[in-house]
Image 1 (tube, one colour):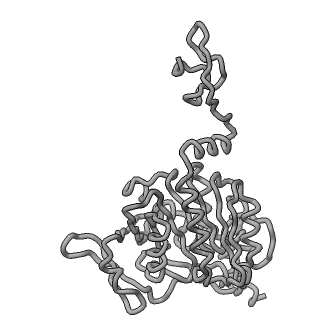
Image 2 (cartoon, one colour; image 1 turned 180 degrees about the vertical axis):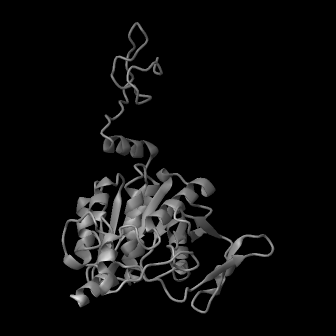
Image 3 (cartoon, one colour; image 1 turned 45 degrees about the vertical axis):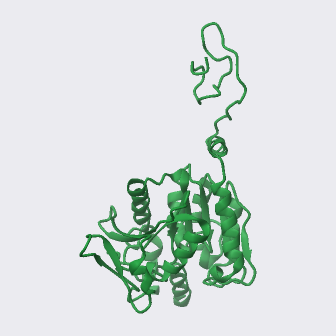
Length: 335
């Protein structure tokens, strides 16, 4: 029994790199935050002019570090929630690759207790598994982390949800879907080797309990935008059927990518990974405003707008119930 509990913890608990792969400090010249490179981190990150380093306050009183990589040709932004055993220092190279290949602005963040973010990450052993399972908002408040980051994207960079793609990797799919379920006008969602729920990783169940750490099974059904699922067929940590289950339950599933022979930590090395993601991002980029609005109205159960020009009654109101120029019935705007 103890071994089973240890396997559960190892699969979806948060275990940050120790020591962190980077540090931050204020630049004496301009007062801005900058990255201090370490032996495990590439030196160019410290001098990258496209990189903004931010320290954001969460409602739990922690300060979390964010990397915002700017692309002058970007039309969309990506918010990336990473997996359990990495921090921003290790992910910097991947972020640069995604920023360039997808022509997007990209924000990644470290959870409380990761990298240079403040707060503590709870560590568990089999004797504390009940506390682990029943604490849905543990690990310094990972949900509070992503909510604070999204708020920063809005206020500091003017990124609206209509121009945002959420990317959740492994256990990062938990906070990511928590946010996605609350934003009805997102451009898209990417689920990378994601989990159905916390307990499903161990028990292989297709339902969740009220005390489960993550309830992605329920939240995926509230996501009102295209969803891309990426998973390796030989993933021995999170079985690919978990990703397949999320794809089947999505309201608007996109063509998935099942990487044959792919494991849990090497999908980025396959050419199909970049190729398929590029296709998805460009598809989201080229989706017209009218198409997105039509999809949103359908997801909210509203009738589609008519393109026909209606005649007008003697009192100046539209004959049709829904005006072609606005969602209000019997308005005078189409006189």
